[in-house]
Length: 287
Image (tube, rainbow, N blue to C red; front, side, top):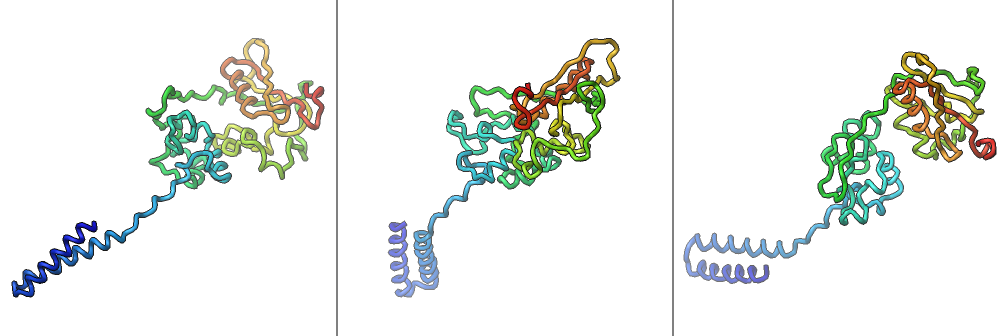
């Protein structure tokens, strides 16, 4: 630019001399044009380069996400392995990974009340890759796209009232005790809270925490599920489902969905066992 400015300055001086020699109005116009060129070069020289725009949260590596951003990402079922900063993933980072494990499509986010979460992380519909409409990334090495499995049968199984171990129906307590006090419900693990899967009606697979018999701190009990037609035609026995939970909780997804499958798909009576848990009961009692 300095060389170009010198050339322009020399041309201005030449044109000015021509104007002084009464070359006419054309020389005056040439002086003004070349003077503008030299001024433009000076402005271009003073122009500073703009700083690159800050990266959106979804373009950040997982390690740089703030605690609030990680909490939002986990609500959308993102974990470190699916976020895209795996050191073995060809150095890619941020939201450039295959999200075929994320269950939500963009159209489902609004119904699941998760759309504000995605927008808060900087996602847009054009950049969202989660859910059934996601296309597998061709950049990922050694990965095969996972076909979405259909849900297990069991929606038509008949749930019965809570039973005691003697087979008699248990009356609901007017003042139930829960496995955690209400002030601790905010700190429950996600696999117990299941905020996007609990509710009354609307196709939610699990009842609210306050209505979930497996979240109540009562004695041993059985939650029965029968085949869609009622009792099976012949005595084929029954199956007892014991959900895990580290003797602290009873995992919702390991209880009713499994029992419903046995009841509908195999026409078996199935019972989910609510057993004693720590710390209210000893380990010997829990066994």
